[in-house]
Length: 184
Image 1: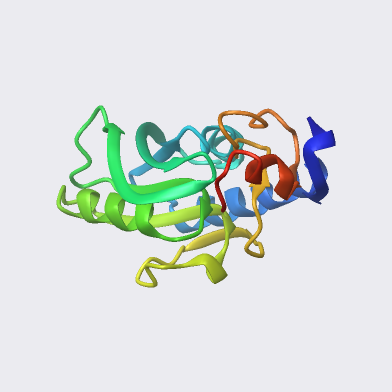
Image 2: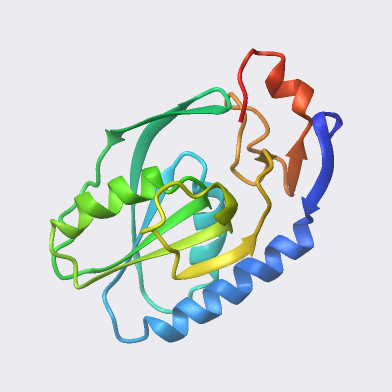
């Protein structure tokens, strides 16, 4: 699978250090609060799994699934495929996302969740791609690393459901996703 990568952007060891740093910061910030981690499926599940092990206070987890991509291209329309299982009223909700790029998905999710009266609502993203932001009202509260506007894979991030299981984050070769007639 790494043969399809242009280069490794963030190594497995670097990812561990990022997740550990975020877990410590979240532990400190949410001490004494009613923390609910909400993973945006499917990409963020790997990140959230490691992150919750680094959080040293009680927390609950839940999942949402959205759809807005076909191949490497965003359709611009966000759909909820799976909603939360439990009410979030009064909870301190932390949305855990793999990558924040255009901001469309997180803008849509936050607008829905805010209507459900959480005590607080914040965003933790493993990767932030500010140069790709279309919805600039969405800003993460916790950021693992900032990346350039390149197509990244691994550690939950995919292209057509492939590469999620890479233990690092890599840049996908353009010819891989451009061969399907789509552009990032």
